[in-house]
Length: 158
Image (cartoon, helix red, strand yellow):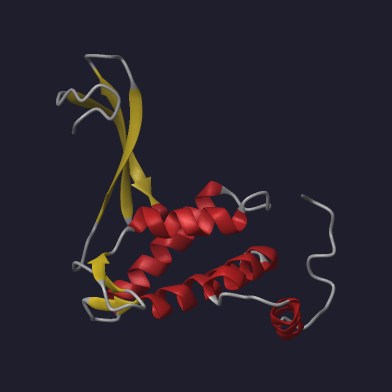
């Protein structure tokens, strides 16, 4: 494994343990050249997923891009990084389990919204507002109304 800091190809595994409820292996590594320590994850990949975007273009599924979009939605919310990683893993497994190699962005967006709904409703509204391209206050009001209460988001946390 190449060191992400100096590019050295000789790194040593110092510790390995199961992660993500046994669906991955977390490895702590050490670079002999620069002394850096870093973590890698090894996961089972059932099939290569291709994302079909709204404009019809296709690109390989990017797990980090999915994680990044969820991290943006949960920013400054009481959601741990481990919860985000579990959501990403569950969504990825769910997409692989569909048995299809091409997945439309809409399916991914719906899976993210479903996952966020169970974790943090504010993050859910944030993600939905971008995903559904809200343009008016009425769009927010309709979504919040569908959550079963009009008091979500009344807090003063940031």
